[in-house]
Length: 246
Length: 332
Image (cartoon, rainbow over all chains, first blue to last red; front, side, top):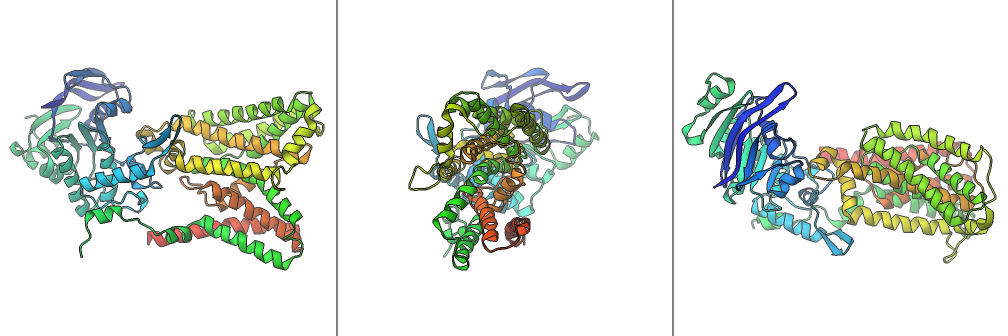
């Protein structure tokens, strides 16, 4: 089932053509690996889906409705969540506080509302359990391992019924053991029927978790095929330009 | 026995006792209490009603502004203009009341001045991305100069028809013999503590200080909150100015000179981290109290007043030293 459909999307910043005429479809419960060299246009593409940039040309459709996003908040309202490359965590706050940042639960009457610590700890605990991550809601993020930090950032996307989760280099700066944890988290999202877009430089990660791979080079989409029908060698060739297009 | 995921997730990280012992504020509080006990035995004049009344009242002006300063410091900012803003707000109050207006008009004008200055600082810092240090340093100069302009650099000591009301407001003791300024301080501290811990606004203040970029990405209205934070800081200076005017019964253009440093010292001693993200309302009070106890005790013990700066400076370094030692242990 198609969740998001991009049609002829382009983005230019002045004279620089960052994304050029890209079309693809995201399916529910499918992990798409988005690969490409630095400057290939992956991040720009994802930022358009997340509402950070508006496309210069082209349209996006979600569940058949045309989607025009002006701000990240609007993307979130449509069920599009993003896990940023630097995770966007506040080290001085607890895991639960980070999960709910910008979406705090409150209780009280009328304008007199206070933070509902109990409910936030409980809900965050439930999400960590669902993610099978040993992360304690009351811990400060600054004391956490890379994998736990990643779990906190991913837990954010599970607060509401997300349809699409965009992940920007989630495994770039963590240890091998933690990479396995993060890949498991991605599989959990997929099993919940969420469409996951995984931006990564790491070939093994994409080949172990993705169902499909999209390769970009110089702003253009040069490949879009099932992972089973491709190989690391082919993808490397597509990224560098040794293989023109498939 | 295996530990299940459930148990791990439910586990609290620190015991109640560990978190108390790890808190800088608690250690400072302990040293204030120990100093007070020591002084009660070492001198005849410390534990007298009159001296305690003086100490608690002297604490208030620095403490009230330190509440506002703590909020600014938690966001990772700094406000150097508070001493001058206190002076300008006192002078606006004095000049308006001296001109024959009622105390209500005077206070409204004074509070209004504080809010305008705070908003000016905040807009330059949040929207035009000026460094807080520079903007508030400029305001330090501007506000004091405006106070001189407003009063023609004279001393104002007659406050028109509501003269007595103003003096009662700042100099009275309406509740069990506790000086009025102390009551205001306690109410404001409780309110600040509540806002920081229990409101979304308070949570966002900590988030901005922890990682401003992350706060922006997660949809926190960072710029608006920063403006409000600098308005709160200026407001706290204005409120302290009004109370101080009522207590002193006169306003000169040099009141509050150098006060910003005392206020920042109080906030830092109380546990606020200049790098942002950490601080409490209670800490601000304790920090201010420690400074005042040091000043008071040096006088009572007959130590030359020139040593004051050394002791207060030492307290600042010691307080932060605790924090460093704790962090070093954690990072190992």
